Amino acid sequence: MNAHTAQRILPVADIRRIEAAQGVNASPPLMERAGLAAARCALALFGEREGVVLVVAGPGNNGGDGYVVARLLREAGREVVVASMADPDRLPPDAAAAYGAWMAAGGSVVDDFVGGQWALVVDALLGIGVTRPVEGRLAEWIERINAFSCPVLSLDVPSGLDADTGVVYGVAVRATHTATFIAAKPGLLTLDGPDHCGTCSVHDLELDLDKAGGGRVIQPDSFAAWLKPRARNSHKGTHGEAGIVGGAAGMAGAALLAGRAALRLGAGRVYVGMLDAQVLSVDVLQPELMLRPAGDVPQLASALLVGCGLGQSEAALQIMRRALAFDGPLIIDADGLNLLGAQPALVTLLQARRRPTVLTPHPAEAGRLLRRDTHAVQASRIAAAVEIAQSLRAHVVLKGCGSIVATPQGGWSINTSGHAGLATAGTGDVLAGFIVALLAQGWPAEAALPAAVHLHGAAADLLLKEGVGPIGLTAGELADAGRRLLNAWIAARAV
Image (cartoon, rainbow, N blue to C red):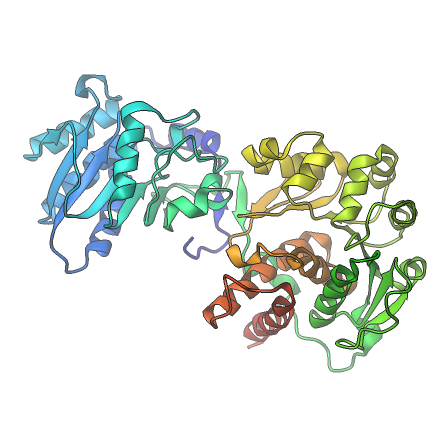
């Protein structure tokens, strides 16, 4: 996704309302504006290369956008072939007008296409209206597009991808580039969307979005007010005490990873409470961590993280009851979430909390909290995250490709940093350590959670640029990269 300040994300229903309110009598018409924006993208992809453009136009307004693109590319001196299986007499009014303008300009339409030496394919088949499986000839055409080796530019959304959820309905175009209109769509940013949209550009078509709802793409600007340099006259107590409770037998590493991450992100002191008290008394690789019996940590902390390697024993359950009574910001991760999902009495305690709570479920943990299967969560990730946040009165990150951050008030945002290298054991513990460190330093949960999530992904992106990953990236490598980035962001705003 290209950089936009406070990038807005709008579901399809909101896009339709904006089109209805501002598109009537717009001059030039919205379809012309969209086609012009996409044609400029296509010409930029061409560069100085020669060749034929294939525009694959569908039966709706997305196909109309395609006819505008074809006409403008032809006017720019490019050779264009338009393929469509639609009946021109059954096109929607705007698309029919675009078809007529293409034909009047000397264009033509073929009813099929085969493999060829295309310089570029423009996918204008289905757009944002897909809500059911793509089958038959449409699916066949999408498979053909995916077999081409040339660049593929999708208009608005790769055909076959649900614009709201990122679900692929059987088959979807795998574009190298997507030009999306009015605002970013949730489905481009989460679940399967990032694997299908390629490099995505957003074109607002000169519409007024000030009163539009929706969500936002998380960026450093989202939490810039908290990116402040430290006062020279400060000490370790100034920067808070992060408490971490977990580390049952065989799972000490999870708590240690979280503790090390909290240190790297600036917590003044980090206490790690091990449920397995016999495991170790000092972390020889990170002796700055203060290891304590699990029950001693809550009273030492200004922000508390519970769950990393906690297990689900009776002792773990007692720890959870005590954590839910903690009078400060609380993060619940991993086995803490599993205990919540299995113990309704804990949910009641959680809902009664007066201090900020942060929950960090992956899709399976979210399913347990919602009493539904993982597939149902993934099929509607934003709705699932918002439901958890509102019902449990907590700030939530639903982890995964395009992590969803939701607030108790129903607001949501999507994180686009990070890559597949994060799909390895321990990275969630590092994220939880990032969150507790920022909360311990006084960040509000509204800023700390999106900041930690974005930083976590950005640290992986930084390592990738340096040749680390995606395959073989380890969780322990993220904390140092996160520290470097956080300090860089603060320094950049202090100039």
